[in-house]
Amino acid sequence: MAEINNEFNYSAVTPDIRELAEKAYQSTLIDSELYKKWDVKRGLRDLNGKGVLAGLTHISDVHAVDIIDGKSVPVDGSLFYRGYNVKDLVRGISARNDFGFEEITYLLLFDKLPNRMELDAFREILARYRALPKNFVRDVIMKAPSSNMMNTLARSVLTLYSYDSAAEDISVPNVLRQSLQLISLFPMLSVYSYQAYAHYQKNESLYIHIPDTRISLAENLLYILRPDSSYTELEAKVLDIALVLHADHGGGNNSTFTTHVVTSTGTDTYSSVAASLGSLKGPRHGGANVKVVEMFDDMKETIKDWKDEEEVTRYLCDILDRKAFDRKGLIYGVGHAVYSLSDPREIIFKSFVERLAHEKGLDEEFALYDMVERLAPKEIAKRRPIYKGVCANVDFYSGFVYNMLDLPRELYTPIFACARISGWSAHRIEELSNNGKIIRPAFKSAQPVRDYISMDER
Image (cartoon, rainbow, N blue to C red; front, side):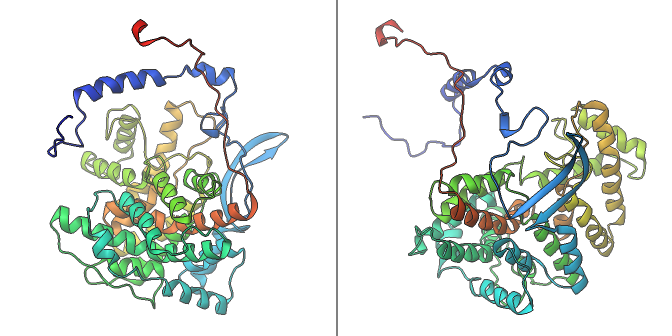
């Protein structure tokens, strides 16, 4: 028997693995013409980028085109939660000078805007669940901290299964109970995971603040994250609006579709949420806001005069020509799979971002973002064959906001998850209530049938 080497480097890609990887890569390549031949909707989208209809939902809707004379005509984007325009919802929250995430969560789950009594009772329920199991932080979160909080968050969610005596019960009342617990716990799971990582791997002081059950979820995020637990009202309100705008985005986004797919198998809530977290982690989905901030960091170092449109335009052209930033040819935060003329979340968010930038003394930096938002679509249109318009998306400003709030970049995507868990929960309950069938798309085999070759003849 071969001797086991306990010194083995599990992170190293050895030469023999590289050789096998090349074989694996070559064996997976598929002729792109075959997708056209068999009319395969690659990525569940047609050649014009339109999503393939795969389900129905009451929960939210994205509107970006009107059908006129049988043709799709791009229009300014709109986002609806349970039929209500998010623009109107945010306007109502702002008019009351209130925190809105809990109200929006209630709406997504129960298809109803709560009255004051219902909202107060709902907030009390969420506050009641704002407590992790005894010693969970010590025994789970503090053990083997990861540099990626999304992985740690998923691990924590899966571990919570072991603390739930009714973990496998997928009746709607029990799933709702589990969902409300996870919605309440996500801020603690995220922030405590970062604190453990910062302490053990970055040699920083360790802060574990007990959550305050008297304040909103947005306030609590800042309260448990910051060493002195302090924050301004505007900081908390802007973070709250960010959570509202990220709470859901139709049933067709990748992580929510993952929720539907995995839920359709009849699996437990913790497994479903962990799968959706894995989806959201990807830089093509929830991780884009970090890339925006990194791009602007490089831009601010490279460009001498932030007010010079010609110099900014040259930098953007260099990005598109793969000469600047990460040399992938992408201006991050600009472009969206659905929206073409405008992303309503970005439009709504921008005014709040401007107020926060002014409070932080970052007016010049906001002006640079504003300029890039205006110039980038023009340069992209000149260089890219696009079937629709291109616009700034919500990630364009969300990373900037998180940066102004002094949030660690490791927490940018987990905060997205702290919002989207509300939408995932609503969609999971919807899938359990309606379908009863496993979601199983068809794949066409492009591999010809071959005769078996014996070992001696290979």
